[in-house]
Structure formats: structure tokens, C-alpha cells
Image 1: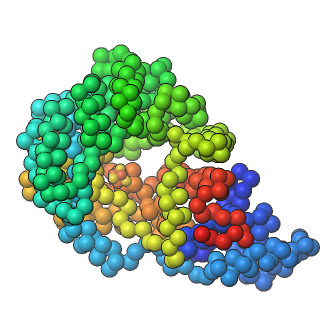
Image 2: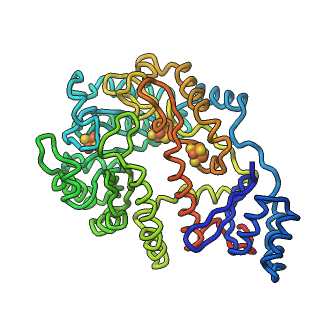
Image 3: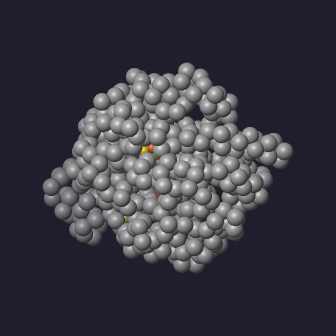
Length: 470
Ligand code: SF4
Ligand code: SF4
Ligand code: SF4
């Protein structure tokens, strides 16, 4: 595998060293020489380069500086071998777990055009609401298996979790009680459409410092078109009132904006949410491999979104930052963190996410699933709350995932950053994984754009050649 990867973003040229996890901005001429070195021996590349560049000395010096920093040394295959992987599985599934994800309501009061759960889960027992006894059983289990030396975290999601406010209140009260008795901290988060927010719930949320993700898809006509109520009315008024209520009480609200086909202009959306007063905005395209619909982003939509980030969003982010403001849309944090690690060699990613353990979700009927996105997919169930997850199924989940992605990801320059696809995105309804590379172009664009952004605003990593890595 090549030890470095070259890419350009807008007017900037970069080289990424896989093992050191370093990005360096280089001159166009050095980039050209590095391209030649990728295609032929170092000596032939130098001859070919000199032929077109009589004043080649400075560039050759720059590239030999990279050489002395190890840019051309061979790199190890980045995917963990079988034994390391099995050891990681054993460690994960014998260790504590401090996170609980509760689907307190499978149904929803809305019927978003891109959502399969607003309508089809009505037939579930108890209207898809989690009984108090199930929720409290999950809480007892959490505290029984949590590491007492660190805090616990409880996430409420649905459907629409605020359809089941009484159970949320009971869970918070019991968790606070147990945590206080053990001297542990407890944190909460909720994902909601905010339409059912009221003063009492807002107080509970603010008092307990919930992390908040509220869905709003944009200005009223867009949101109402995408997210009607169950009886066909728009939901913008109720959702925006709920979010404003939270903001007025001092909560920080991250708005989750779902982008459906055809791709909207991302910068217009961001500006709308900035004016609205959102603390942060996350943009997510509709993509549902298990339940495809006409709202799904097409590959052309993906390209249009990437172009819009290149042409409109990045310049806006850079100007915000240079004006001393944190952009409310910043999808590049992880790249900043990755740069900040400065490990050498770069850390080989472990299991992609908390699926089957830290992110394991409890459905209203007490069935356990790998994470919130799998809830209701029978073939992916991991066991029952009363017995805990089946460790064999949990391990099989990850072994099967690894088998599906290893070939493609093991040879990918970006594996140490990407860590492989989201397991849900390559999960099939029959309980198997099928690798898809749809996500890969997005990942590569995200890295390019993130590195460009950090370089443009002079933050971590992505140093100009000649600057010392901090
Ligand atoms: S608010 Fe969320 S859960 Fe409800 S229908 Fe819309 S996408 Fe589905
Ligand atoms: S970009 Fe694609 S191939 Fe590369 S590591 Fe990520 S999922 Fe795997
Ligand atoms: S499977 Fe995907 S959605 Fe679920 S926790 Fe992992 S990364 Fe997140």
C-alpha cells in the first residue's frame, strides 16, 4: 500500500502520510513531483521532473524533507489482524457499559415523508410506548453493569420520545437517585421533533442539562412539505415554537436538518438556522438502504451537496472563523481531533462504533438492538432486556461486519480516519451485511474539505511544508 495519499481541494494541494496521520500542504510543483514518485522509481521521477522544471532544486529539497520525515516508508496494513480483533471483542463484551439508549416511544405524531417509523409502528402493543416497568428495569440493569468510577449516560429517542413524557420523568428521577447514592454523575440526551415540548418538559431538560437534538428541516414551506403531522398539516409552527421555548430557557439546541431529494442549497439552510438562533446545525441527507424511498438522496444529490460545500459552505465557514465566530455548522470536528492525536504510527481504528454495547438500544417491548437505527428490525435483535444481550450474537455482528468491509477498507488510504462504514448503512433486512461504497466518496470529500478548512483557518495539523508539526 502506498504510504501517502495526494489530494487537492480548491486551490490547495496536500499530502497525507498514512502512518503518521499527518497532512501537509505542499506547493503545486511538489505535488507534481509526488505524483511522479507514485508512478515510478524515485530516480526516474527526479529525471522526469527536472526535464520539465529547470529550477527544480527547491522542490526536490522540499520533497526530500518529506522523505526524511518518513513519508515514503512502507506502511502496515491498517486493519487489525484476527487475533487482535478477537481480543478487542472479548474486552468489549466482558467490560462494563455506562450508556443506555431507550426508545421510549416507537410511534410518532408526525409522518415525515422520508420516515418509515411514523406510521407503520402504530400496530405495536401499547401504541409503541415503553411501559414504565421496562424503562426502570433498563435503568437498574445500567447501574448494575456500569463502571462505578465513571458517569453514566442515558439517551431518549423514538419515534417521538415526548409521546411518553411520564416515563422520561420517571427514568430521570430514578437515575438521579441511583447516581447520587453512588456518587456517580449522570448525563442525558434526547432526539425529538420538539412539537410536543411544553414548559414542564423544557424545565426537566434544562435542569438536567440534556444534550438536545431537535429536528427541523428548514424554512416553513420546506419543513411543512417534508414533515406533515399525521393528519396532513404542517408541523413547522409547533416544532419551531418548541425549539424557541428551549432556547428561551437557556438550552443549547442542535438542530438536525434532514435533506431530502432534490438536494437543497446547504448554505441557505445554514443561514436560515443561524438567523433562527440554533446553537448548532447538523445536515443529514436521507439515505435508507433498508427502506429506500423517493426522498432518498440520489448520487447526483450527493454530488450537488459536495459541490455546494466546496463552493459556498467552506468559504462561509472560513469567513465566520476569521471574523472570530464559531460556525454553527462544522462537520469537521473529528478531523481536527484526528489531527490532534499526533500518534506515530497513527492509531489503527478499533470497532467502528458502540453498536451492540455502548450504543445498544432498548425497544419499547424490551428487545435489544445494536443501536437506535436498528430498532424494530427483527433480524438484528440481540436478545431481551431481562436476560441481557446474547454475547455470541454481539460478536457475530462484528465478525460479519469485519468480513464484509475488510477487503475494501483494508486497502483504503482513508481507513485510519474513516474507520469503515456505519454498520447500519451496510446492513440488509435479512440480517446480513453487504459492503457499499456509496459512503466512500462522501468520506473522501469530507476529509479533503476538512483539511482545507483547518489549513485555511490556521488550526491543528495541515501545516504548510516547512512549518514544524506542533
Ligand atoms: S419526527 Fe422523526 S420519528 Fe417522527 S416521523 Fe419524522 S423522522 Fe420519523
Ligand atoms: S472510505 Fe470507504 S473503503 Fe475507505 S475506509 Fe471508509 S468505508 Fe472503507
Ligand atoms: S451502526 Fe451506525 S448509526 Fe448505529 S451506532 Fe454505529 S455508526 Fe451509529
